[in-house]
Amino acid sequence: MNEPDAPNLRREARFPRQEAIHIQIVSAGAGGRTAAEVMHCRTEDISATGFKVLSDAPIEAGRILELLIEVEGQAKRYLLVAEARWCRPEGAGYASGFELLDADHGDLGPWRVLFEADA
Image 1 (spheres, rainbow, N blue to C red):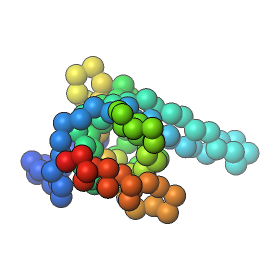
Image 2: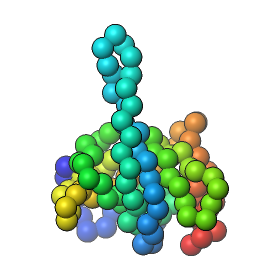
Image 3: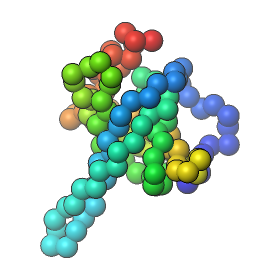
């Protein structure tokens, strides 16, 4: 649950924006089955390459997770794959930083286009 010591390691400018985000956490169960837990969170700031999320539970740094983001005013939901880079207590919950990863099954390209059009 460590945040980098450097004050700003971001490659892209981030902008304050609160959007609904659903994080699917998949874990292996008995008999080789997988069980999925979904955390409902909100972004606090976003960029084309990452964002900060506020959640009720901690998110382990280093985990690769699938994220479903609902953007206000958009019918499309964006499926993104991201690595949790850090997590720390904040207020009554937790703040986590995510770096987006390029995945064959994700919407990173359309996400970046949306962000560039919005910035």
